[in-house]
Length: 344
Ligand SMILES: NC(=O)c1ccc[n+]([C@@H]2O[C@H](COP(=O)([O-])OP(=O)(O)OC[C@H]3O[C@@H](n4cnc5c(N)ncnc54)[C@H](O)[C@@H]3O)[C@@H](O)[C@H]2O)c1
Image 1: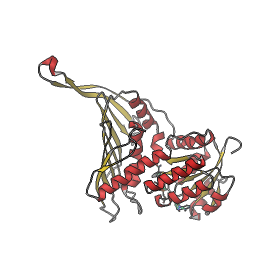
Image 2: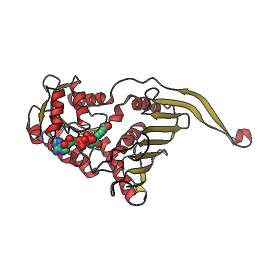
Image 3: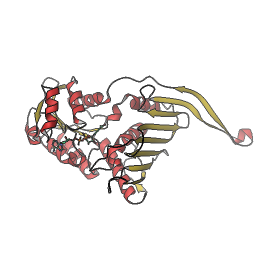
Image 4: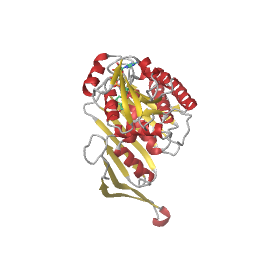
């Protein structure tokens, strides 16, 4: 890094890694790209599309190279810890795709290693960079919804069944990272129910419930076994309500001036409820690819020596909820208490 730009290696060029390569290729903070995968055929596809990108099947070569500043890891979850730890130990800044690590112990180890070496550690919570999600954050922070009563999120479609992780570890990180980002707090209670319908031992349908210290509650439904693709979140506050539908092309966010007014019994003799249905507003959203904003945050946080929005701690909070949810699911929906910092 001499010219204010970075040389970055992408490790894992399966389904998701090529998206990282493309966004690095278009990023003003990225100088050179090295792509790494165990399978040569995957690297050949990258080399055809981006002739200037160097390719290698040897991860050790990447970490030993002095001219590689940062490593972005898009390999299966079971490999995240080992690859990230090796990269940190060789002085590389590290980005790890979601979910951050396979256990909270692993996540803590990676955070400690990065902190000790003063290296940037970031987790790929892509939705935290998406225009509808950041707009909702603005709306909530401005208090437009009032006190948040509950959030309900649905992320279901047919497939893709994973071989090594449950649907909770595969899909719920998206909803959890959004919910924690919006509420600015982590849950104190988690429970989950689900089933392994297709592959025994790998749950493919799960219903999660969370309770927060603020009083808010949240529900997340994830499934690889559904007839249609749904990506829909409802947020209900005491002032207004909001629906975010990520499958919509227009009007992804709708703000409803709807609610219930409770009239004080002291004034009216006996209490009365009235239902309010006002305007429905769809706020204007910026238009950019979330992954580009995410890559920019990673590279600029290295250059500016600041923490990225989705840092290791954010990754750890999500991993702790995933662990608790999976424990609960395996234990007939047992309520799991989380001892994590409530405010973030
Ligand atoms: N942020 C998002 O929206 C998003 C979307 C999809 C996937 N992901 C995440 O990206 C990661 C990868 O998912 P995927 O669907 O691309 O998986 P994939 O199986 O399609 O690809 C993984 C690739 O990693 C390679 N690989 C495995 N071990 C390696 C090693 N030691 N060195 C080099 N290469 C190695 C494999 O050969 C394979 O090509 C997962 O953590 C997943 O959760 C994130």
